[in-house]
Length: 224
Image (cartoon, rainbow, N blue to C red; front, side, top):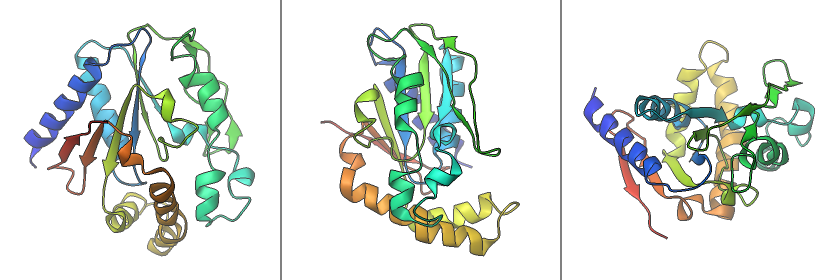
């Protein structure tokens, strides 16, 4: 495994985080398709940042889902439903991104929903240090409701077809190949194509990580 290339990439991302100068916690978005490696990258980056002495808040869009009945109201396999109905962006802004942003009181909650139980969560309100870093991973993070809430924007890119095989492998203990393939081909991949066409997220991010071969990632810094 070419750990050197991955370590170098993580070092560059940590350097980019360190170069953000704001008077509130640094809010880092790690966007990209399902199964592209966002969560792994976010976890790795959090370890590097903690090693540098930063206070890291790890959170994910999966803890800001709407209840199952709402997010599947169009259909469990609807691509439009995946984009429009899946996530509670109002709550995300209200309890996490707003409090950690300019003028916020830094009193936040990292989650509002338990996906396994399909129930609301209300974890204790915590106060973040002013120099904390929020490392937040998820889909559709450059959408209009969220785009202005990030201080550093990273997009994990992977060929959409390749995400199917990764998802099948990742979910092999809980779902059959046919189930995973149907979910990806009918819901997740078309919703990503919708997002790419409507929002053009890579036009808005600071760094793109090409993760088709995770052990040998390539990355590019974008200028706007």
